[in-house]
Length: 438
Ligand code: ATP
Image 1: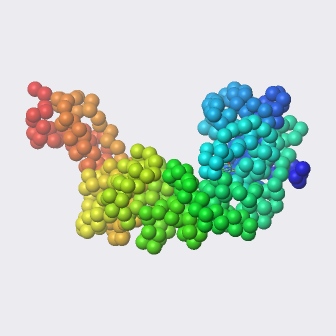
Image 2: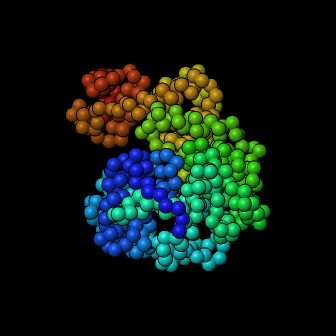
Image 3: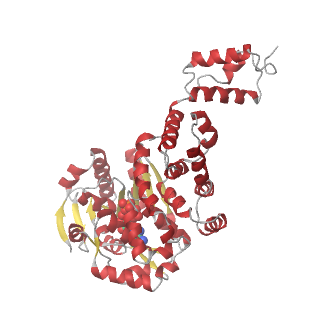
């Protein structure tokens, strides 16, 4: 069945030695357990597309959890099993994660419901996947290492750049696949194959996406917004009439698309400048989308979508960002410490939103410079130094250290010696008489 090809050489060329070693070990474990193991899905797809992707998904014909447990043991990693789905995750000492599933058939009780699980083989496991390009499997057992298993013509569709479903009612069974099709199409610049597109349009017309829970909609929306450049996918979503199922409250014509298009650019710059300031890209897009809503409308969105606490806080705070941007732009000068007092507690996502809102170049530079200093500068003295200088502990300590920090942030003092001297001078001037121990 299918076409046969060995891709051990391609793997050798494209994958880090460490990854190959993990895969070989998985094959050996399977052999010992008299099972067969394959790596599948996005990992194999991206191997052929020469896109770096080291997220290993394994499917086991046999007992996936047993294999995962044994694999973790041999590689010195940890295993976490999920009984409900008969899957497991192996986490290795270097942080690599390997997902392990038991080959299975999933059948749906009714459209858009959660799958139930039943034991079965690789082909059936591949058959329940979204698109042919995701149905490729590579055998890892010794003697067959690198054998490509292609039941549904995924290799050919990969070469032709086609996104194709496996059976006609695929989109009815799981409408999130409509969004996944658009995401893959735009990410790889592929084309949704003609029949598949017809079935997608049909499912859209029949309002299948309306059956999905807000939870699943949000999950897919996050995946789209986390793409390197989600704009083409968003445009496709707009063009296919899918928008009203994603963010019905957002008027697509009122979205500042100019701002949206700047997000990936500014984010790229940010990641280079402030690589230690981690961001959730999707949240920045959400904040920009929500900019057109009133406070009450944003609150209503919080009720509908299961945002986590961090995201909720971020979205609520974003309502104040445009005014903050205007305030910052209006001032002719703001020192780093002035800015710290205004924006020290603003989340990284909202800082990017703030930068997107600032039109004035000087104001932008001031904020950028402040962030740079903020990441670099730290006080070297601490409470113990204050004690040693004879000060009595209390809330005043924080005030003293804050003021000293502001001086350092403004580059008026530069090192430990400067800090101690400043403190001594302040004491001499009698500034903390009530705090000095007698
Ligand atoms: P990415 O590069 O975005 O991580 P991926 O293919 O690894 O792509 P996942 O969302 O991690 O994407 O899914 C893993 C695999 O599970 C996919 O290869 C896909 O075949 C399958 N899959 C995910 N969601 C669905 C779905 N809704 N219906 C069918 N199969 C799905």
